[in-house]
Length: 406
Image (cartoon, rainbow, N blue to C red; front, side, top):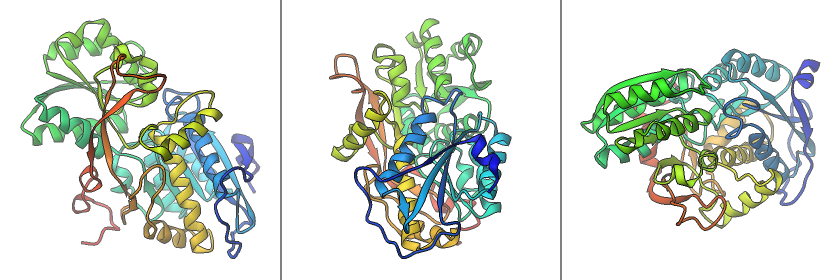
């Protein structure tokens, strides 16, 4: 075992607590242990929407499964990819060579694409829950990578399409300048043009920008009806604050293309009210989601889970069930089981992983409540509409994945 693996990441052997999944001891693990890596943003701009919460969600799934596989331990390791694709790829390579079977979360599209490439090369599993670039299930697709929670196509066909159909037919984008933002701008721009709207311009800013004044002034000067924020996390929060400070929202509307409940919490309802967002999951959807959220909140010091945290939990549980059903951790056998088995849990009641690795499920368009509508802490969203799975995600006919049969 490569000792650097353990020096560079936190290592947790998870034991059974609470609701244990029924165990099948008739199976074999290649190294007498099953290892799951959580590669995430621990210290950067996405730490609040990913980070320690992602690690905790994966640990919860392992605990609920029972903490062991075929009588052998399940271990969880974690590391910070620093929002750098080369760092993420190097860590993935080190982990896979050191015996990690599956890597989860992968906040940041550049990192996710890089790790998907390593997963394909090493024939080990990667599950993307916190990145949007559709290249994960197109150019970088493989039998070993799954794109689980959301992607840029589903965001564009949720928030973007709804706003265009409501009359927002001229757009200017404020775009974070890397794979995630560029891909999201492209997907939403295609939706705008397909619905006879116009994209009048764009300004691209570095990841982690704190001064949005020049970018917001460019957007204001464009006179576009809609300013599309092709960013997320702290970048989106800072852009919204700047737009309010400069009075942009008096004459133009903001479209936050990837807004999280954590962002709404940081902004506060007086600032965020009325914003529409497309999310795959919300903690107050049903009894199952509320039960999960309550447990998560108790472990995370009062923070509520977002859709990616729910996806981290759900996808880890699905992977573990697939290993159990396959009777081994053989990557090809597990891949086949993951695509064969339906997904019905607190995240989705009718999920399915396609041959290209895209997990398809319903998506939801939400609107941020007014302060008067909110009944208490974290009661932030109201449902506008459900987007059926077959409409939410890119059709297989448009996929460029080599695994899709023509």
